[in-house]
Image (tube, rainbow, N blue to C red; front, top):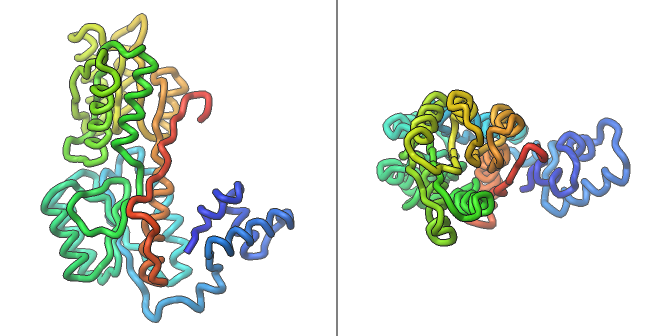
Length: 340
């Protein structure tokens, strides 16, 4: 079943315009409305009135588990989850969202058990990358017969239905290519990650280092440091590295705490700052770009990840529709201050 977001993207209009066209309310150009209805038919969209007749006999509960709830990139993921939650209520489907502030294996194992006790029939999860979580998810899938979708971060060794998110390894390769152009293929790049236990961060770093070694032998990686997504830690790492290591001409921050970049530059009083690439389009990171503290921002479309994950499970549980691909990758979007 298609979503309003998918129809809006294909039609080149807003979600509100799609809603008005499909539910015959408000003013809208008749030609635009007809185009939207045709696209909806092609994609198999089900209107609210049709959904009432397709509602399951009993309420379907879908569990959602996130991590790093306080991180800025979660704002867009949560926005997508909230909109999906409101729309799926029309189907008689309840989303039970459990948030975690950290990347914690024990906490996530406990949360999975809590959702099982609440009678969920599907699970969307940003998994902690550990053997215990992998085994637990396979138990959910095989023993409890509950489908699992991973989003934002993936995990190896599970029988999950699909992954929804950015190809993080390829995004790291993208960052390497950008630094290759910026530096002319020479110099030293400081890499700052969030958590070594976070699969997303690790994939980005691995892809970056892999491509640097392959395509830019004149570039040296001047260390990989964890910041725990804290701006103060990012600031301290940059100050220490630039004071102690000569010739650093690039900084890659693959996770949160980007506000510490500008603070470090102000403290150091640099004549010329290194080239900087950061991740995720948030208000704080837009400010970093606009103030010329960074050159590029790589965005992962967190809204789409949060919006699609519960819909894939809803389609599977209500209509028996499986996703067309095992990995539903969101776009790797490159932003500068000029195209925000």
